[in-house]
Image 1 (cartoon, one colour):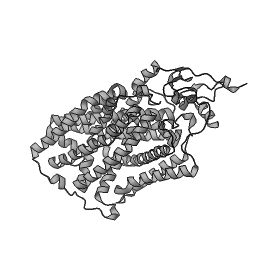
Image 2 (tube, one colour; image 1 turned 90 degrees about the horizontal axis):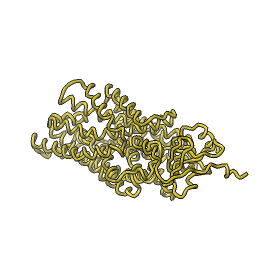
Image 3 (spheres, rainbow, N blue to C red; image 1 turned 120 degrees about the vertical axis):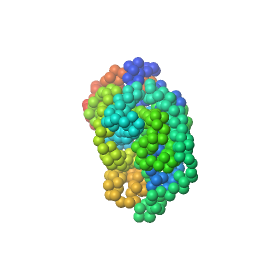
Length: 528
């Protein structure tokens, strides 16, 4: 008997499953490929992403670097950062728009299924730490103006932030950030004008030489390189980019690569904020720390300053809370086969954020972020090299293999490059050597890229993909438009993410999420 006659025919449709749409309203397809029908209009996605343009961190880092190394060196480092970040995120955002993949799903091609779960955990932990860091600034601003217990203000911040992100990007985040964006820029301009009015203007902020003298070679010099390297420690923004850009319409990829995620965004986020931060710290004489910048603004502007800090930090934390919860959801589903709605993970991440706020925040967070920075830098280098090498080989972005039954559990080239480069990066951080501040992130990035390219060439493997037949993509005319009913959850998803279950006698269709949690499927797929 021809075994093909035993295969269950696909139940197909061309419209979205209403049950899937109801879940996506809060889930944003966090465990699935984002279909084209769920992609956002360009303006909506721009407003959602520009939540990150207003972080006090961007004012603080430029001000602190100017105080340490001089304004001119800080501005040179800032300019290089805008160019590098704009170029890398242009590549990543185009790829995400064409594939619809989250960082967790794409990581399967780079690291294998188990390695992808670790990537999701690192992403979630970093987003949580940044939420703690940024949220604490609002608490400090409230306490500075109103007084009272800092722990209570931290609780207030978490309680009002939590419901803002339960609805996801499509339902809510683009709207709230679209409203708050002009308020932030108006407030920042007002702060600069206020500082000039209150303290007068002098040009010394541009000629400030900084506390550090020119760095000798043994300390990694020159000073502008140390400033540039400091920005490389924020490569988590590359992961943020992918998880947002997957919601872009493919036809808008060029616009988003320039305006939403590219050099225009970084000109505003790093450039405009950085210059304002350098000037405000100089004019007000406040301490060049993130908390110091916020306190300086509140002291200068009173309740208007409180409002500015609230607007800026609320906007950035919508992104932090959203990505923390979605990646916690992905990690739990993959590592523990625990499937809970994203709103549950919003509550979990919010509780963790508050508890961390009650600890000596900076003492622990800066060390943790340095370690995670090494992990994230290595991941970005590997992802970038994978995309560029695939493009050179003529492999279309939307052909990257991520389906659980068609990738290895662990993929040596990606894992060795990632873990190896991160270990070196963390070792450099912990070494305390003077030159690490200027060269540590660069070494980690280059090492990850070289290891990945070299191990791919050595093994002859281009990704974690494994070859299997009976691919539902080949059974439909357009795998991005045709929906296929899953035999596991009884819901219909685009054929692009569907597989057939070799553990069943009739090769039942199965979606990417159900496949990830089905041990029998994974065992059978691995054997074949």
